[in-house]
Every structure is written in C-alpha cells, then in structure tokens.
Length: 492
Image 1 (cartoon, one colour):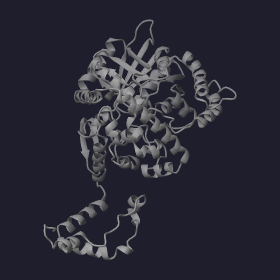
Image 2 (spheres, one colour; image 1 turned 180 degrees about the vertical axis):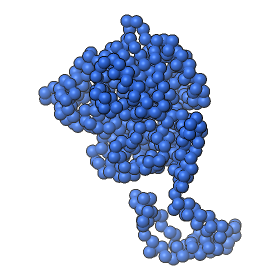
Image 3 (cartoon, rainbow, N blue to C red; image 1 turned 90 degrees about the horizontal axis):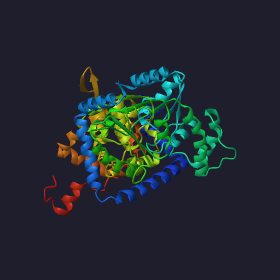
Image 4 (tube, rainbow, N blue to C red; image 1 turned 90 degrees about the vertical axis):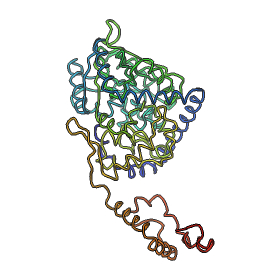
C-alpha cells in the first residue's frame, strides 16, 4: 500500500486537532447520525438479515481460503470474454501498468469512477506526473478534487464539508478544471448537483479512456460489478473506447448466486436503500456495445500478507459499505483525515496497518483509535469482528511483530516492542506473587492518596492526558475485608 497522506501525524495528534474543529464536528455528527438512522430502518425491513449476514461472511471466508483458484478462474473468464488481465504486486507496479496503458491510447486525460483502490495506490498523482489528467466524476470525489482536499469517508468522501463550503469550492475552482460554475450559484442541493452535472457532462462526452474499480468480480463468468447512486459510473463504463479497472484481489466472489447476497446487504448498509439506483455489470468486450478495449489490473499491495494472518484476514471480507464509520464514536468526533489513509474509521484502523505494516508511527497508532465498544461489529454486513482484530494488532504493535514477505515465504518478524511496558508488567508480576509486598504497597498508597496527582507525569501523559487517574480508596480491600469479615472467606 502506498504511504500515508503526506505530513500526517500519528492518530492521537491528528485527532486532537480535529476534535477542536467545531464546524467539522457538526458536519460529521449531522451526517453520520442521519445515515445511521436510515440504515437501521432499511435493515429492519429484512426479516432474514442475520442469515444474509452469515451467508456473506461464509462466502467471503470460503473465497479467501481458495483465493488462488478463484483468481485463476477469473483470469481465464475475463480473457475468454475479450478482456486483458494484468497482475500488480504493489502500488508502484499498478501505477506503471495503468500509466502505460493510457499512454498507448495517445490520450492525456481520463474520467474516473469512484475507486478506493486507485486512491490507495495514488493513481491520480502518478498519472499527473506523466502529464495525464484524471477527472473524478463522483459528486463527492469531485468536491474533494476541486477543493485540493482528501477523502474522509468511504461512502461520502466529502462528508466533512457543508453546503456553503461546497458552493464556495465550485465557484472558485470549477473554471480551472473545465466549465465554470453558474453565476450566482447558491448552496441548495439541486443547484449544486446541476452545476456538477453541467461541469462533468462535457468530460463524459469527450473522454476516450475510463478508469474504474469494482465492487465485485464474478469468477465463473469474468463479470465486474459497480454499484452507485448517481449514474456517473455508468457514463464512465460505457462511453469511453478504453476501460481500465483496478481492483483488489479480495473483491472476487465465486458465482452469480453468491453475488445475490451482497446486492441485498451492501445498499442497505451503505446508502440505506433497498437496491442501488445503478448496478452496472460488464463481461469483457462486445462489438458495438461499450468500450472496445478492456483491461483488468488485479491489485495485491499487501493483501496476500494480510491473508496470511489468521485473525487479521477477516478484514478482507470488507465490502466497503462504511456502516462501521457511521456508528463509531471515535470517527464521529475525529473525522476521516485523522486516520492518515484512504480507509478511515474502524475498518481503516485494522486494514491500513495490515496493508502497510505497523512500522510507521501512524500505522502503529491506528489499532488504538477505538474504544472497543463493538458497535462496528454489530452493524458489519459480513460480520468482521473489528474489536478482535484491533486487540490482535495492538498485541502485534506491543510485541513489535510485523507480517512481512521474504521471497515466496510469509513470516512474522519480531522486533523490540515497548521496554517500559515490559518493565511494568514484570514489576506487576513480582508484586502479585509477593502478597506481603503488595499489602504494604496498597496501605502506603491509601495513606498518601491526598498527594497523588490526577494525571501521570512524563510519558504517562499519553494515557492520562484525556482521562483522570482512578482515585485510590481510603482503605485497601484486604484491610476492609479483615475489619468487616474477620478475614473469613480467603481474601488472600
């Protein structure tokens, strides 16, 4: 996976700054609560939701266990249908493949469907470095691009912006990218949507190359699937002469019957709709219908390393619905930018450190960006136990271990871990195995409690900077038990 956003600090520092932004908090609170309520209503309509959730989990787990076989089947199916398959081990290789494919067409601009995989690898920046301009056509992605911003949500990348901010961005920036915004543009949703439609229409009709991701790939037929709500995706998938799709290898499902499950759970979990307004599928190429050339770039970029982790691999079930973000109390207050990745929120806190490793400061901090309340697990349509993976990754950070690849072998590379924590645990072990010393320490703590600070000094401030230390009781439990029960019952 490509690096973190340039200049991004570790999560605690970034979150502290974000929490101080009242406008951001207001935007996030309004948006997440609205989406959350609508989703709950849409899910409640389905009597067999629990069964669908379990079916999605089992389909994904089965596919991941046999991923090599299904990827080979997919390649055969896509090739037989007239498509061309490319394999990319990492971001650099994927960017090189796509850049060369665009150059082969002789074009210097492309239109894009919303794609987290291409954001993950930094494709737009790679294309720009080669003189190729990429135009985002999803409304929220357009807002982010025009505002020289970064996405902050999986489903609604511009969730941190309000309507007034969007109007100002359109009025100020649209002319630099094409058709300018209408004079006197207001912040009403209808006017903003119409300004975007007019701005993008000329790009749709002019572009010869389209770039997309995919929500799903069906191995048995080589079919790719994109679900969306605006229709811009269908324009990008049908009008250009060349279509290039960059898709993570985990997005595969074995059969069309398997796909049926996710076409029920994804829209309800993401947009709170019974079905997506636009569900586009394509299988290779067809004369006189759609692009004449189709390239599929299958992206690894840390996914096989994630697959090697028996606990962490469940993150690869993710269907990018964003339901976990909308119920997360941490995301609601800190926003997506604090996560330093294209994947924010609870799923980003477990996916990014696995795709990128935990070697950087921000990736080592992400598993701690959670209260472990479990709300994310409750709403996940494929039953990813995010709290379990968070604790697992915290253990990896503490131990200093990191899953790496050495040639064809995946290994867990140990490192030094946290010396201070190891020393504290050794001291605790000694105290708990010496009851007399423990009793003396408890009594001393109780008698001096009026002098205890409310926060820890030095490195301890990282923990106590946002919480008070628990008060020491006036009497140790052992003394209370001895006084009230006469020591009966084995307080030792």
